[in-house]
Length: 370
Image 1 (tube, rainbow, N blue to C red):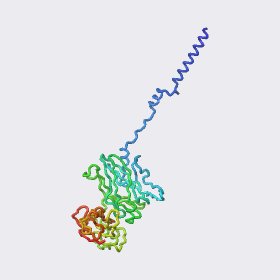
Image 2: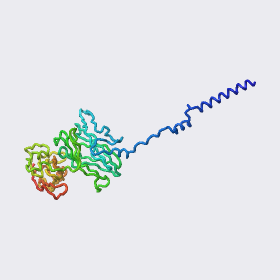
Image 3: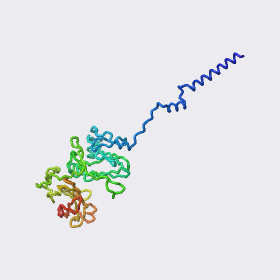
Image 4: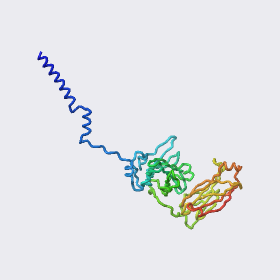
């Protein structure tokens, strides 16, 4: 009887010992064991992730350097690297240029061209990356835009909210470039305008001119007032269809041209009439600004068939640039005045300085007989 009790006692003792040894052993992943491992003095703390403000501060580079801020929000991932030409639907080919340029890098603003594209469908475009580093909603826009020294506005504007970033595209339409006989964009002049989108009366944060040369073998972008007197200011006066001292794109004169003004300050040529324009009646013009100032060309108190009928037309041509422009009389205005056929147009033409409307270069009235 005592032997049986002793054997039973030994079995119970062995079982309890085995259970206790297993639960307390070093290989068991218990809650207490996990906590002790995390609190181990040999564990290294994980560094905090960089803040957006630290990233922006690190992105400060000298103006003109080709470095994009290190931000995941940027779509310009291949900064300064061109994609291979790719084919779109319908056989359209899109080419991408290697050009990239930081134009503005300040505490409050960042503006960069990240990619240059040209395709058969839309035309020519820039992919731009913008940062609004202020506490205000900002409007970014281009003014006084010239491509290869011919006025050509992409009509671009973009609002970037306070403290936000933006990726967008600026596009010059293919038809507009074709009309100006621009096959390759080698130079773009523009004024970058940045202002408070919630208070237009507030002084702009930026209203500066830039010149960009977006081809592989061209110089870097330049900023500042580049309005130097053009070569056309020489005493020799160019003919109606000629360039002025080589500063204007070549244009072949036509027998149908009507030269209204041709002097040392400007050239105004009527190049044709378009009675079948989808918007109304159009008069097409070629303009040259031969001065060192930005000029406004405009028409006031115009009449059609001796009936007062305003086209509300004005064109800004920057210093040393040319423009192809259209004066348009709206269909509704012609119908209201019961004008079915345009036989005579009285055209009071004014040309004045962009900074002072009283500084007149032209103030004459011309009579056109289409």
